[in-house]
Length: 177
Image (cartoon, rainbow, N blue to C red; front, side, top):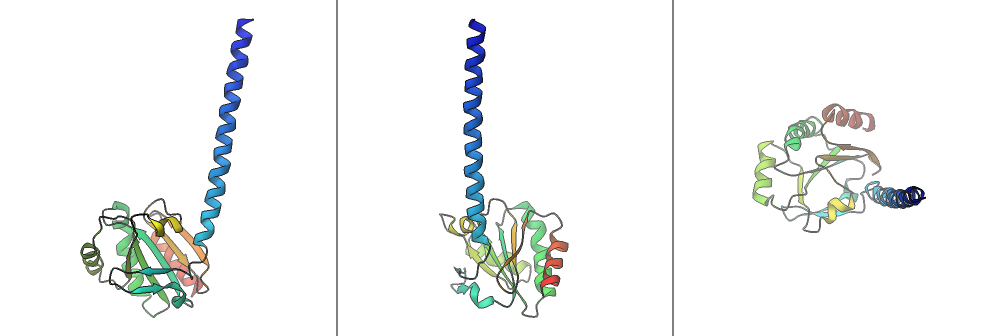
């Protein structure tokens, strides 16, 4: 009889635990879906660059827009940044706009300018704020994350990490020019 009570209590605890896990999963999935809608169309967003300019993404409608989230000490970003610079150079016919956003608060304006210069790049540089309001808006959790939007401002693809970065970015640009 004691054994039955033990198993009954263990079953109850197990079901409660399973219920809590399932509720957590539903909440997490719902939150992710709600946040993913934020990255769908960036055209009503403005950014302050480290150069003091205000960038309105709506002004770049009609171009392919790449938003590249990174930070200077990111080892994986160091592998994709030279590829991004080459892509910028190869597609420099005004049909492509690139903005890079550092999510690391310790990346200073001077260090970011030196970083951009080292790649001979001309893309705009933005620093996320202390509340990470930009990366939160786009639901960024890893770097590098690359968002590519078509000429209408619709999200084409969200690339996480470095796998097939060069070929994927070029393929998406070519198919939407």
